[in-house]
Image (cartoon, rainbow, N blue to C red; front, side, top):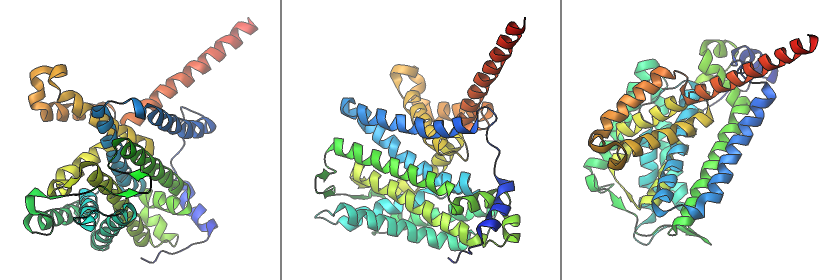
Length: 361
């Protein structure tokens, strides 16, 4: 996985023309403040609200945070590198299986289970990436789907992963005072994992590596002409995304204490892709927001007390809702937030002009 290391001047020359223009709806300083303040406020709110959730809401929030980590891992590929994968669930599922298998009948330690999850998901991502990244476009999508289905049938049709019934985690792991058998501990461990993954990806985007990925997304040929080994960068991003998906798989296995082949199924890859698109491509906040919106829609449309008999056909309602949202918001929910900011800025400019005219009058 050799990655060339061009000079900083060459990197700036190659990437700077490719960087997307900052949104016109808000000054750059305000964008940076919001990019930090909003996630921090959400984390603080989740941390403070943890003890007050009911068991049902706490479980739902934990599931949403795990899926947000899964969506962030795919955002690195789709929004960060321009690689649309339809087999991303394989890495999450293999990470979950590796964690449970490593625990055995006596249970395993938290670091060991996480390490095996990272090794399994990252190893398979390396294998898939070495072959699939030699293709492009629809061919890349189909190759990733084929590899994911291959992994699915390996755990479904063999005794390695318990067949179609899956396997159970006999005892949840612990590390000192961190006992994953306690739901409240699970909640804060998952919240901490989400914060760390988000912060890591935010820092990665500001690095030279992240700038190179942005350049590859916009114009790979120009990056090659500038001396970048784009294949190496894409492979590194692919493996990293697979390992982050493995983290989500590990947390999901610990939460549910059971894994089954459905975790690797193609429809999970499709769902996480919808979360990323719904939130807005290229935005970390969009990946998290899209996950929350997708889970919320799913819960609302499948609840009889809210939608009545239509809850029996929630898949149809969810599909229609996603189609409408994507058609009306081509830039996702983050695009809607951008429009609101633009409206506020225009209103501020109008008021300022009005006051100046009134003063001259």
